[in-house]
Image 1 (cartoon, rainbow, N blue to C red):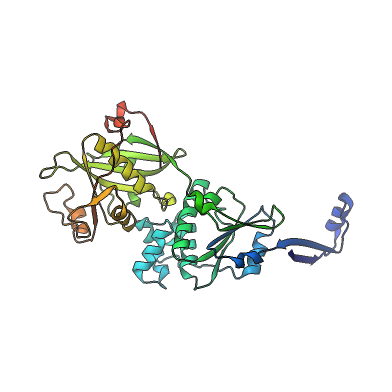
Image 2 (cartoon, one colour; image 1 turned 90 degrees about the horizontal axis):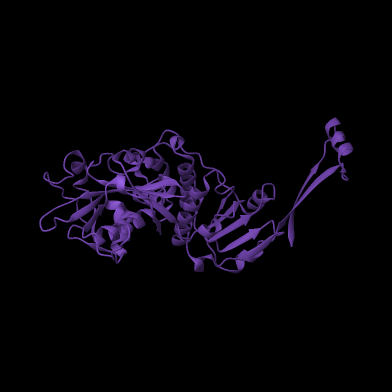
Length: 383
């Protein structure tokens, strides 16, 4: 096994003399740190994601430096975030941000300096991954060390999907083991085990389940989510608002609006679907809609969803739970008589949108979510 040896001559003074007298230090002329470097086997098989694991001071950063250059990113602190991706066409820049779980469109228009820690970290990952040349190994140090652990899981799942789809290769150094089942790495290298490279079979296990808590909430809850909606902060107060939480943290909201029309007096529409930026990229928004679709169908409603969000729209196009309507893939074509007329309709009318009706199974046992708020209890949902 090869080792990286870091030697340094000791410049002795009264402080080092104190250390020698207080502790049993044998070598008083030179310090030596030996780090096991046994990554040759990673070239013996195809892989996309590798993780170097170890505690603080174990040598993770040193190993990364041996493997190649760790790039530093300097975002323009005044330009909108998406404008920093000017090495890509605008459509591709939007796609990479969305793919990395940073799909909050309003955040794309903000400068990097005013994004949240989680958004900044995703933006840096998106830039590093998107700018990597063919065959280049992307090196990331201290992965997820500065973000909330649930945010780290969401970020990891979004990252691994993009890296595998684009056939990139990335090595992440981290002291956190809770991200492994979300990253699903092809190999891990543990310094705590003395430097052992182990092949992973995480892909066979699939993504861990997430248990969400869902409850009916008042209109005022929308204020917490509205700045993250990609079209407008306005919403009809007659909506039923459903709040979704993960580990007692709010992650998303769904607004259900009565939508009667010719021959469909029992119709409702998903007026707003918002997942907070830190939890995007895990399919939470899709599952929120599928779940509420099944609840509403059980109560006799027809459920319609229209969106210009590509991730949600493409999911519905490919899902057996949703059937395209006649306006799918066309402009919204909202008229003055619709509930969504006015300024919002004017902005949306000419945009290409995805339009579907929920045709999946119904689900009983959650009828309380449709009752007046004062009569409700919290419910739990596995996705």
